[in-house]
Length: 205
Image (cartoon, rainbow, N blue to C red; front, side, top):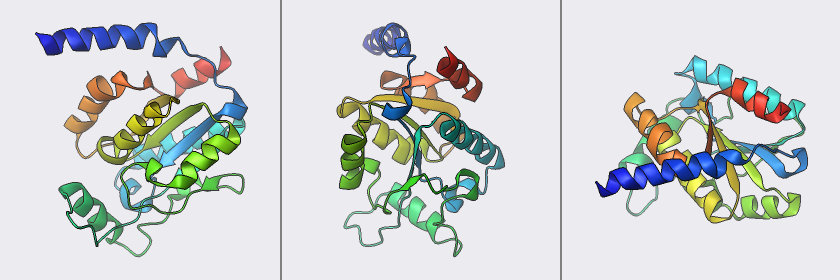
C-alpha cells in the first residue's frame, strides 16, 4: 500500500512539476551520449538509428553534444556483475571502446576522457564543463540505461539540473530492465519524453 501511494504521488509530481518544463534554450542545453560505444551499440541497429537522429537534432538546434565514454577498470577491488559485464563488452573487439559512428563525434562536440565510474559525474571535467557553459538542462541517452545512464541521471538531479530522457534512445540489459527503468525508476527523476518526435514538438512549442 505504501509503495502504491508513493508511486501515485511521484506520478502526480512528475506530471505537474517536471513535465511543465518545455523550454530548451540552446545555450543552456546539452545532449549527453553516455557510453555510446561500438561495444554496446552494434547488437542493436534500431537504437543506433534513434541515437543518430538525436545527434542530428541536437546539432541542428545548436545544443552542445557531449560524448561520455566508459573504460574497463580491471583493477577494481570489489568488482560487481556490472563491472564484469562492461569489461567483457569493451574487450570483445579491438574497436569496441570506440565511439559509435552513428553519433559522431563531430568537430563541435565535446568528448570527455574515458572514465571508470558508472556515473559520468565521476569525472571532474563534467562538472567543470557544466559550470563553464552555464548548462541547466541535460538530455541523456545511451545503451546502458539500467547501469551508467541511471547512475548519471541521479547524480545530475542531485546537482539541480533538469534532465530529459528520450525513451527510444535508451537501451538496457534486458527488455524487463528497460521497462522498469522507463516506467518506474526514471520518472521519479527525469522528464521522460516518449520519442524523438515528441521532443521535436516540445522544441517547436
